[in-house]
Length: 617
Image (tube, rainbow, N blue to C red; front, side):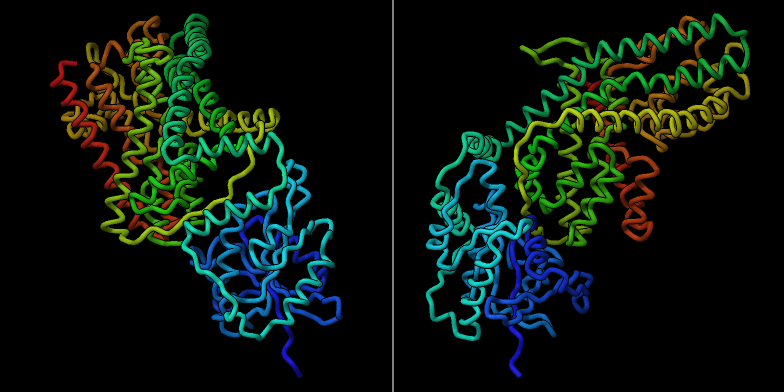
């Protein structure tokens, strides 16, 4: 009895392989795992026009035979016949996305170079036509030297022609195809050839598609792309201050009015102090920065939904590779700008363990949204709201510089880690670029509401709880006449011990007090300072003032700058440490992360303070 012939569906991710597999095999499928790995094996039976059965295997999506993940390793071994117990495919069915032809043709050339019987399924051609792209399959077939069949898998269009082409290709199975000339190209040569073949196969395209192609030429250009990205980020941070100021001032005025109202309508006592000093001064000092949070996330959501964020990842790939990281690390690090917790969890997609560990260890250096209230209150108090050029505000420039400092710190830390404790080589990175589109207003509104609600929920739970506990520790025991309440209290005695350590870097008693609860959540540092100054205020009018005037009266500029430098490098909240412990299966690396981040924070805060003092600031 002759061996049953086999065929394999191969192609890039998102090419429609699974839909084509389902259309060709129907219910005649079986799913299991490849032996020794957790990668899923999908196989089914299809029938050629002659009635001959063929086993069809749907291989995991890959970008190259040079495997960069477990999925791609399985694909490589099956295609090359190196997988134990797995028959070498007699025919390779290469599935291409007709709307993204140039990128998919790079891997297709590498597969054709193997000299095996090949049929190309030009899939999702209906979506290409919808986008205004008219293709010539015959021209593409001539360029590749193999049959090309247009298909629409979800509508079962072109399947008969594809099966017929597979039958003709299988008649060559077992023969030595290497007698035919197959040129072996480098990756750069394949990319150049893919561009020429895609250009020759496109008969016409719409103006919108040409516009998108022109945008990519500029936004993805190795020299133009990075300046455009950083200019966009610069505009974002200018807007965070310029646009949010009226709304933040209104909220701040509302909190102050509530404090005045409470003072005037409640009798003096512990309950009134709890409401004014603990709840309103503490939690309110954080809530007033909701406009900045909303504006920042509005820009981030627009970048994601428009398709630009993926291109930013492509632009950053070269920088990531220069410090020993894979471009796959960019998405987790990008997520860490919102919160380090989902960023660390997203590292599960990184195949290389050393690459993944390095990304986890530097994720807290990305400036998460919890730091924004800290930055905003200090910048608002000590950086003048002046312009240093047309449309360039000094406050926005400082905020932009803090974010850049975090990024530079993360890259330098990665460079050092990859040459020491996580030594290893970087892997390659390829990602699918989505189409440009206008962000749907409904999706944008939902996204903003969700993020605003998360911020307010943190203010109503974590920040509220920590602030109340801090207020209790600050309020008891009561200070003697002429003695500072914040120093006489339980919290004050704790802070006095820490103050000995942080005094050399310019930190005062109130800052030492705020650093401890800030480990629960970054925003709590602002709430802690507000509560501390409210407890110490001897006059109700002073207590009702916002935090910014109190800081201006108590801190020097070098101290404020050192405080900002501390939060650029200081470790994240306890929840982040707990997630890092779970993702690394132990306390070794989280404790290492805590140690090196605290050391960086202390050193750079000290350098900032003493340089500012030396400069006469």
